[in-house]
Amino acid sequence: MLNQHLLGLQSWNFLGQAEPPPGASLAQTQTDLWRYRSRTTALLRRYARASVEVGRLPSLVGREFFRARVTSYAMKNFEDVVIFVTDMESALDQLAEADRQLIAMNVLEEYSIPEVSQVFGSSQRTVGRKLQCALDNLSLILLNMGLLEKLIQV
Image (cartoon, rainbow, N blue to C red; front, side, top):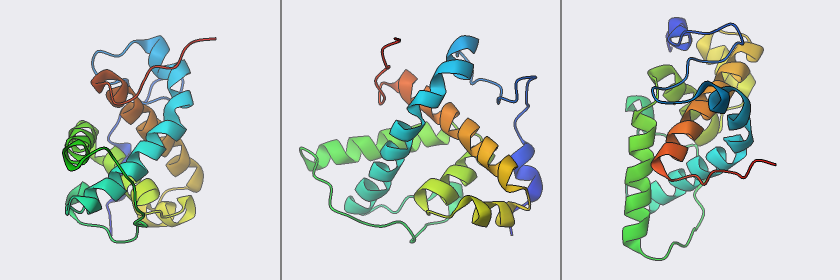
């Protein structure tokens, strides 16, 4: 069973948000990143499918997963798929261990929030909040790497 203290690795500020990754502006991390969560989740699912296509099972948190659905996804060529998988792996490596575990279980392995909270021994509300922060942190990393396009402010 996973250690309960792994979810508490990040420090939290007075607004309940995780401390921003280095080089991030405060306004960008606390007010804008929620808009990227669905796009980040879609990229993670594409990463899961693409990594299986190239013959590499994603091994976040040191173990492979087999629960994700495998569907066909066509990219321009095999090299594009390999580059995408490599870029996503490097983005995920920049996350804290607890963030990687939450994302791996909920998005890639498709465990529900109640299942994840039971494994971590935390409340569903805490797991949900920390998962949102983990997705926000990954969104910021993907924006900085150019894998996500910045949305236009309205």
